[in-house]
Image 1 (cartoon, each protein chain N blue to C red):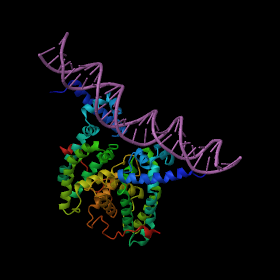
Image 2 (image 1 turned 60 degrees about the vertical axis):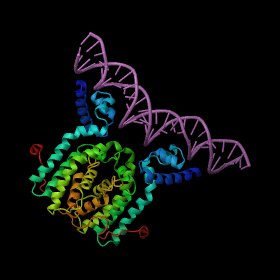
Image 3 (image 1 turned 90 degrees about the vertical axis):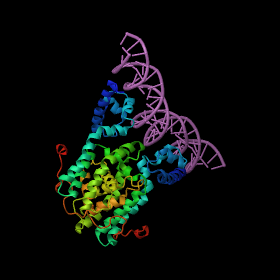
Image 4 (image 1 turned 60 degrees about the horizontal axis):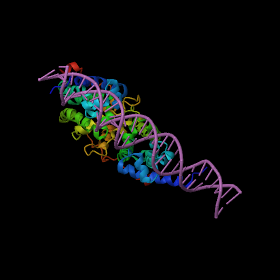
Length: 202
Length: 202
DNA sequence: CGTCAAACGGAACGTTGTCCCGTTTGACGA
DNA sequence: TCGTCAAACGGGACAACGTTCCGTTTGACG
């Protein structure tokens, strides 16, 4: 059964309207606003995209796809795996910070966004893991950081990066990736990070 | 004019109830839930705490204070400024990850939480700046990262750290702090992070 | 014990995401 | 070309939330 012509048309109109509204008001824009911009009723949105996350996925699918495909290309053309990893993460960060509020919504623990979360992970995690593995095997970075952890960290660092001139997410992500090179144990307070009891503070 | 006895009593009951609900359901818990737990009406909350952010501040004021005061103590007792910085940030991270959703709400761009944002910044930013300065002056870390940027980065990394065993915020924060030691330029893609055009991907 | 402002509880309001239902309309066979 | 009818539609309805309003209760004080 093929879709009716008006349904196909509305889907495209909706995607265009949503993209425009996302640019203007962020991905948190009320569903009513998107419906109004598209000139349709709110129910039409939910008929085409069962949840807001599905709409977001549809709007950005092409760019996520391009980002995923950039991974192997960068690995093949960069001088070292770490350079490729850095370049790929730069690209990912660029994508996130130019979409108002997307990083924040990616980290939302709202159950409705689980599908969005999964989509990004399914598509980009293997790419990141490949780059990470290559750099680790080349001895350029420590081997005990999982791709999942790194991607979540990068995503988190991008939250709110678009409204604040004093906060440059790219810089901090750069520091994080630089920190991957360190060979000492990080975390768990093993290396002399003596912790203080409250008693010692008085 | 001194407060009426029932008002003073209710303020304490509210703080206790809010603390309990925050532990059980996170800082996003509906105001109605907190009111119910305290056995008061919703308006009573707003009478004592003009905005939800003020309630959160009141609940955590003591712990934030303790964290702020730990800064100078750590600087005086640690072997190096960088160790003090690392220990202090560990303490800050511990505070954030044990309060469900606090990190997320700290980064919310909701206007109502500006006062919460400001409170944390006013109290903790000078402390962080002092530690950062000391480490920079000792030549242990690069000098071009502002305390504001670092604190926002750390706060962001702590978002959602409480529900996901695969994501260890302390580890990533450790990597970030370790990245501070790097002396090369970070960010702006200056160091050989050749960017790809979409054309090169096909 | 009378007064009255401070403090109260809960209903009301505005804004959101989501669902329902009566109406419209595109596709297709006669 | 036209009648049929399920797919698709619009917008109002509902629920959950933060916040405010208002009529009622109550603690302090003379």
